[in-house]
Image 1 (cartoon, rainbow, N blue to C red):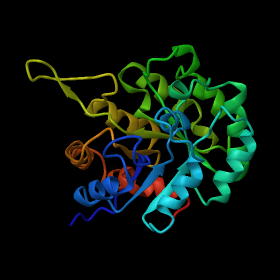
Image 2 (image 1 turned 180 degrees about the vertical axis):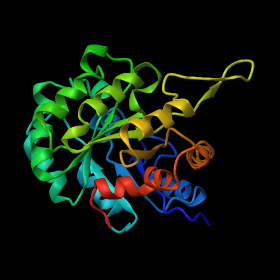
Image 3 (image 1 turned 180 degrees about the horizontal axis):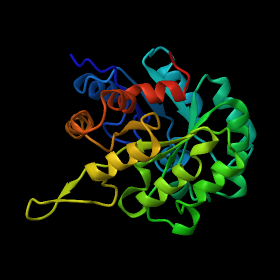
Length: 276
């Protein structure tokens, strides 16, 4: 049994029929195998269910799925096709969820655009955390360029948010710049250490993939931004239990303090979401 009380961010949960091996029971199996005590679950995006003919209120669906699961925390998503953005954010809060997952590239909304500014304003008012996908994702880069997150921090100084993948290989330094540029405003920006493992090339040599960060990158991140602003993420169901276990062991083996390791593996996320 691990002596770490691991609380992981970033688990996408899907209804049956929309994605294989991506249901609640699959997540719970992975958590048990990886000795993860609790996790944040994201509601699916509306396009992920509608493309297979499943039309649901994605946030109410997730609420019903996890309402009896004391170790699972819900994050809602926004359906930009139906409008009423403020009301959707209020509904997410009313369901007892702690935050919102936003994927600017997949949802095809601009980080500093009108629609997302409505989300940020209401989320800030409601005390909701926002978890962003950052880094490459095959959409026009001008809509999700890393420096746009500085505009989010500037315009909504009380909004807590994470930059998942920390920009990946291509945008890591820009993500670090955004965090450092706003560090005097209350440290409300978190680095999401999600899917950042190194990869092997054809000869078996370790290389950086599109989202990979080196151990030196991670240690530099902690050195520059402190021990309380990095959080571990699963990227379930896109990453396996084996990948997850290796990622946890990697964090434990970094040449950083024990406090920093415990922070990354759960304490920082608990603090950000005000969970005792």
